[in-house]
Amino acid sequence: MTVNVALVGLGFGAEFVPIYQAHPDAELVAICQRDRGNLDATGERFALERRYTSYEELLTDPDVDAVHINTPIPLHADQSVAALEAGKHVACTVPMATSIEDCARIVAAARASGRTYMMMETVVYSREFLHVKHLLESGQLGRLQFLRGAHHQDMTGWPDYWEGLPPMHYATHAVSPLLALAGKRAETVSCVGSGAIPEHLQGRYGSPFAVESAHITLAGSDLTAEVSRSLFSTAREYVESFDVYGSQTSFEWAQTEGGQPVLFHGENAERITVPDYAHLLPQEIQSFTTRGVYDAENGHLSFAQGGGHGGSHPHLAHEFVRSIVEGRAPSVDVDTAANWTSVGLRAHESAMQGGRPVEVPQF
Image 1 (tube, helix red, strand yellow):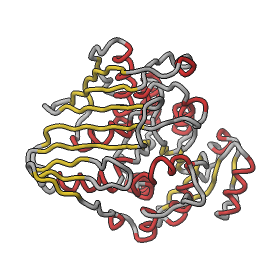
Image 2 (cartoon, rainbow, N blue to C red):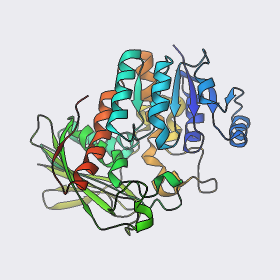
Image 3 (cartoon, rainbow, N blue to C red):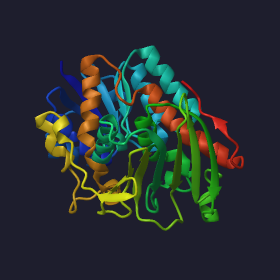
Image 4 (cartoon, rainbow, N blue to C red):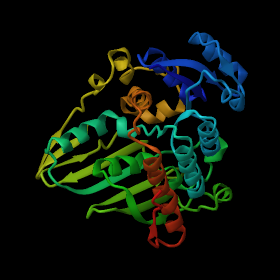
């Protein structure tokens, strides 16, 4: 079985073009971008003839089995629902949506259509995550005792819909590795806001906080997780990080870009080099864990600040394609995506209420 994929959004999304073209079970049959100039430039570069400036027209194409959405955050919900209702499988970059109601709409559309939905969360396929997962599954960490995630990023210069966005509305990079390692859904969250962003940034979303910090309880577990998030007016080198504390061994993320993470065996610290996990992929796409469309000379903001997302892109594309071929739920399926996204949405509600604990919806 070959899955015919259409790629929607060609900024960061262009990174996936050569991956789908090389994947043994996929064919990239179409690309979609509102900007005709960028659309044609990408089409010419990668010899792609079927090009759409209209998303609605793309969804009528009978040759398209699946769409991979890499468009601005405010479009994710409507575009995901429209594709599912059109009978297409959907992969969508994070976050799933910007409201609980929209998460519920996507869950309902996926169930009604019987089609696959996967949220393309990069962190849970980064080499760091895959390594810690290996340590956990091999018993080297022992019993999980505590989990911590952080995502600090200066969004100055990004598209205007980012201005003043509540920090926890885009929390999945910090939330996802914790819940994925625990193998549990978030149950409740309490969150406090700290500091303040400039007044001119507060108006759009009514959010005053520079930093939001949350504690999460997990269903059926004595584990808790802590997440902190900032977007503006907070001095910190970009970081998407997670720390994992086990009874035998603990893992802490590197403090600076280019630094080394640390394993703690009791009180003894060991700096480690995290291996690549390309061997988990088909040979045709293994090279994409260390290279892609964007590089030092041909840059994109997500790479200038995001460090290439830990080699995750071919793993994400492979999981999406194989889940369709095998007729199974993907690793970050629609229910998981809704839970991970809702943690951040509910966390901001809690912060606006002075830290009152709130329940996370179970979809």
